[in-house]
Image (cartoon, rainbow, N blue to C red):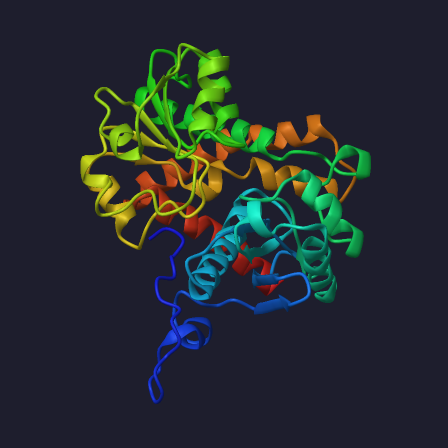
Length: 372
């Protein structure tokens, strides 16, 4: 089934049983332990912190800063992302549950030191139940500021006792997932001679480009930001760029599609026209809704579950809590190769899509923790 995506958190009309409260307390998409709405009018902060599970330990997940179309959309994203973090942390072998925070607004316009400090105070108010880090729209320098008002912040700079940019190991882990996919589908753990399309060449995607080129792959990219594409093309002239994701997924001869931007990349519209035989990317919540994973399987497309292959970053920030060691983290991230292969094997044995197999393994670990 894949990690279930919440699709409707609108307030329920009077006398009905729908909306966000129903989602949280009674629907299959819910199960979250705690959702905190945060507001600091002085700084303009509006944020949502969602804790899905602490069965394995304190909830761990990044802070996304994004200009959502509505507050309801922001809550939706926090719910989906936090639930995904529970599964990600479980399969990464971490002693952490899942949580995620979103700050509402355009970071280029409203991000200030006062806002980040106010956000840090809300993290502190949870007393360690939630540990934060970077995500889309937030960076190491931001976490240095957030950490000034709480001690449960990771992804800080080395100068401030942190591990630095977690994108490095995120990209490395996705590359390991691609290698495992190549092993499972083509019998050889390399992308040499394969055409790989990357949608989104920001913090993670541009590093993934480098791994693939070193491995001998042909790389095609796209990004909504022209400057991101220009940077990659300047550094690697052999990389081809296309106009948009619609063009990328239809690229002739594409072997691997790597969604590395925002979620929902795999949908009823994109899956039928996808030319790649493998999907393996860094974006969270790639499945737009339940059932897409079966559509991929029915088309013979091998899907490496997003929360499995993009776990390198969370492995890094979790290690920061115990005294960061890059080599130790890279060794753990390399195991994403083995975990991905194990999921493919479980999927084949159980006759289910890889996303469902990954869910089963993660849920098994969380259930065992609850019983212990």
